[in-house]
Length: 613
Image (cartoon, rainbow, N blue to C red; front, side, top):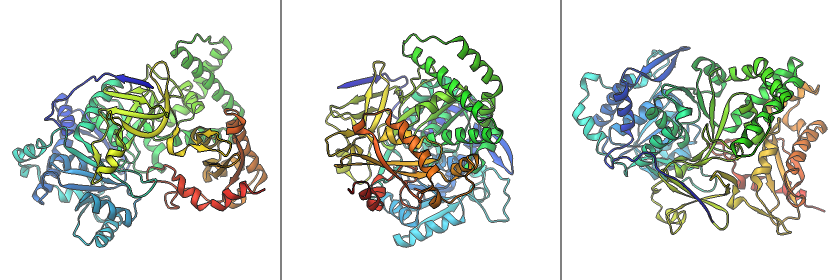
């Protein structure tokens, strides 16, 4: 059995809570910027002191409205400054936050309100308030709803938004003693937030996350990743704040000294990156995949695709040499490679870095597996992709690569105050500062995910290398056992196929079957660019699914993936679907994780066709 522990860097007194992260930030520099907020195309700096003032004003409103210590308050909104303000105010009023994805249906909202007991909701706009009201009608109880955005005629330049401006009491009416009493009423071990799992199977479960989870992770992660986060280093937050990863990193930034900006739309991401010029980013692999393929498409339009590919390969080779050296392996950098890299670092890599705003040196990648070649490419081009690993139940980051200790292909070493153990069956077990308290109203489910030594059973499989770096190999429940008894972990193969330019999703099948097959979907946007570059004109997804050139392109991805495994594990057949996997189709969760069983159920006929003689 493998095991590694990283010792705790910072301990906290039992009477403190997550709000102390903000108070400490104000104490260190009240007038220094904490947030950067966009209004009408202009970005405005907001100091830590100004944010604290608004937090107290909104907290006072909640208390005046009857919020009691421990009451649940839901937030349903895209990522934006008001999200952060609402959550902090709820904590200062002694409440517990319940995040809800803005894409949730009325049925999903009703379940979360019912299970959590939340009867006060912050909704971003009138449309989401209508969804909440529909859910409340299904619930059969009164739910008070506040909205961030005001009427169409309201002043759109206000910080915070018009809806909150109308709601917040004047600063002169804040009862400082009462606010402090409420804020201090929560201790480390009290529940700070209830985060509902994505629900890949059955109803989502509410994870009780404590103030200790957020505060301890923030303190220790900030110190652990000091080179990345940095004092007053800017970041652009665009992942959903309903997801625990974004919120854990946001609290770490509040404590660590970073300046936080928010982008609520992926459509505006490149524009926002150029304006904010972040020093580091938090993102998911799909973002980096899209940036890489977009850069390739741009090169193709300019007749420079071959140059781009040479530059990409050069970056990968340089990064691999650096990675080998980080593992204590002697690796020589050929003069020709060094010269090519220096040339591309003058004429091409800066253009790639400019997409991130021109000042981004690091990016933390989480939520799903990152292609090794993609990580090597960006690192060789000047942006270190630091992969991490965690779940909702571990307050997201349980492990992460550091700037000075980064091994591509791994998800890093444990956070300080965290232990990682590999069980005899290969399952990853976690104990430490980020592990959640319990599932709400479900003691049986809680007991089922902890072993006798108090380790959380992640359901993922992995291995630890000689340096204590974790490599995730797959999901324990997703392990495919073929008719010949071969155990196949689908994740690595799926990742390699999905990394192909026009592939969006790949799902391996083959449980108790004679061989492995795959279901593949296409990336609609990349298909358009790829088809144009290859002289194929325009085609629908249905047309592309049976187009010989498209099939051949997908086959090339499959062939590349098959080179990494034995024949018994290789993909022998595949089908390209004319459909996309989306949240609306029921194949992806709100956090964009694949609902594997949903795919297997819906496309059972296609799967059976693989194995008909």
